[in-house]
Image (cartoon, rainbow, N blue to C red):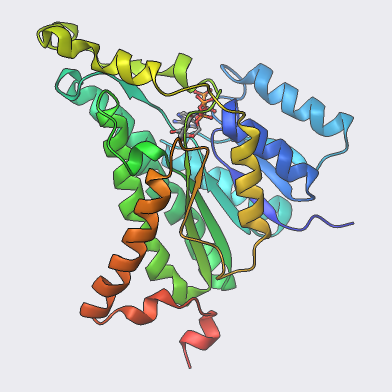
Length: 296
Ligand SMILES: NC(=O)c1ccc[n+]([C@@H]2O[C@H](COP(=O)([O-])OP(=O)(O)OC[C@H]3O[C@@H](n4cnc5c(N)ncnc54)[C@H](OP(=O)(O)O)[C@@H]3O)[C@@H](O)[C@H]2O)c1
């Protein structure tokens, strides 16, 4: 049976990316699992994915992909199109976090987190969109976070990067609706991935310590994030989005978030945003249309 959808995922060495790659391949998607440095730091991760694909005859291949590098991104996208003929879905998953008081985060650290969580998404989208727009179909899925929707002090710089992602993706969502392309966000709560151990810490410790008891804010937050959930839930949410019909996918899908804060905010801003678009003469952008329909 031919694979249903061709999917490229960034950041598949661990966590959501890894689980999502396997989940989608088992659902008959042809999956290209992006990893950076597959001959070096991710050599064993790449081998494991390759071995799994061979053992279970899955349409799953690791592919070199450093999201912060133009040439690497262009090569990966060209390679997927060469091998599979086209790309149906891009999952922008690669990401970093940083813990600590906002004032203690150095500019170098701010640049690093925005480079991966925001600028790299723009790089990936610009690499695949000409191809998707030419075909008049496609799906861009972005792994955001509850921290991009509600403010979590102690994770402020991470939240700022994900809030930037949320705003950018929402704009893409409207701008691409008339091109037959869906562009959506997934907003996970706290999950058991490698993100905690890979987390950066605000580098200016003296600045943080000078807050006295305030320096405990990041610790308090992390202690109250609750039991980390199974990343499979996020992979399943991504899978459901891929299986949903074009134009029927929600802009935002929250998964495993404590309480209903994010869901309520999403509902509220959906309503407000429609009013905003109406005021600016852009309400038609809320209607998903094929390219042919748009050009009538
Ligand atoms: N886990 C959670 O609780 C949670 C909650 C909300 C949102 N998220 C988001 O979910 C996404 C995935 O994170 P995760 O939780 O699965 O954490 P993870 O296990 O640390 O995975 C992050 C992935 O991103 C990759 N990556 C980082 N920088 C990269 C770069 N420059 N080029 C290519 N790949 C790069 C990492 O590769 P290397 O191994 O090579 O570093 C790794 O594969 C992130 O966007 C994160 O912000 C996570």
